Image (tube, rainbow, N blue to C red; front, side, top):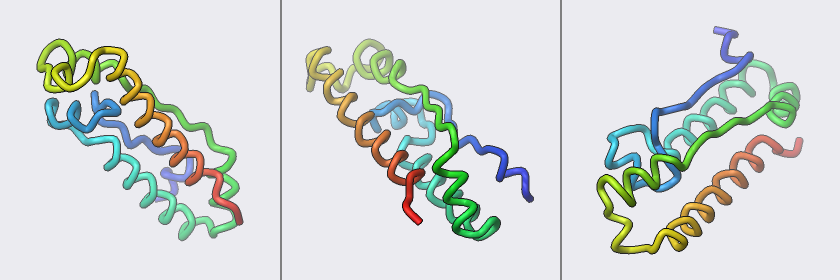
Length: 113
């Protein structure tokens, strides 16, 4: 039971930032992984107590790797977005999603106690 204190992974192969990517590949979307992270935080606080869990969340290393499949699936293989965006515009669209995602992770991990 206590193994989850040492680290967790909410990864799903190839979700991308764009929800369309996870829809095309039928994988767990990024927003769902974020929901799992929020649930993990609650479990961690219940297990360790709020103060220790919040310290761990602030000091934790967060790693993400996303975006390659957004271009591959949505611009080249099955291009639903290519009719909507030019490549540069799609990059801006993805950058906006990435920015919001990183802010959300930061805010969740940097919760004030």
